[in-house]
Image 1: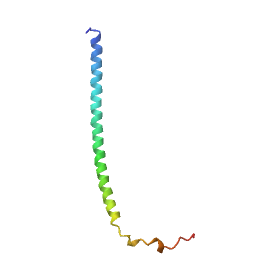
Image 2: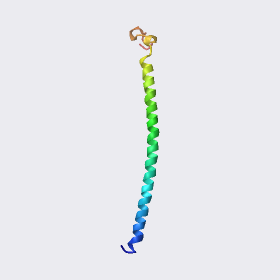
Image 3: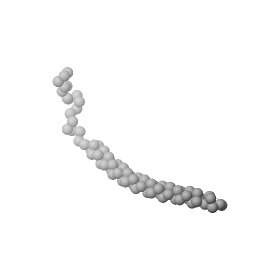
Image 4: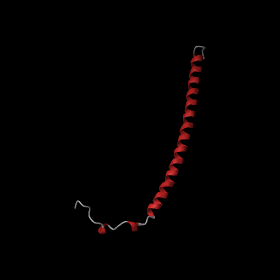
Length: 75
């Protein structure tokens, strides 16, 4: 290796180290965001199960049979 190429090689290595550090930081931030999203998804799934159970167990006796309903005034 010549002295002329040595600074260029050091610059390239420095650039690669900077890129690697940036990528590591980005991966860490994405991992944190993914963890938060997974917690939210799990919470929403639990809420959906709760609501679905409530809807399934609703008492339909408060609803009139459609044949017993009087037609709206515009008929």
